Length: 52
Image 1 (cartoon, rainbow, N blue to C red):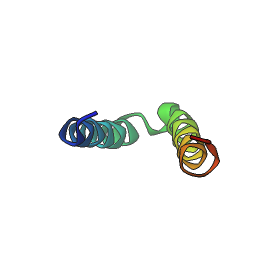
Image 2: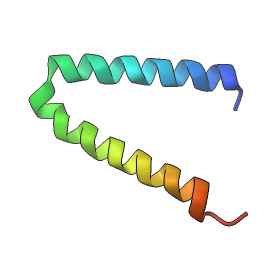
Image 3: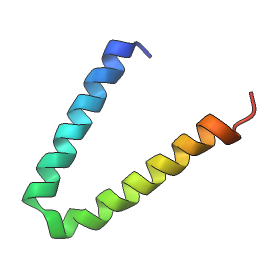
């Protein structure tokens, strides 16, 4: 993908996570933790474990 498009997507995602965190912290808090853990694991897999 284009770097500008990815940058826009990450900005929107970050803003949405902050908004959700402050508006519905108890309901979405666990969901955000799960998403963050999955994203970290996927990043580690793509960077270190995936063979080309």
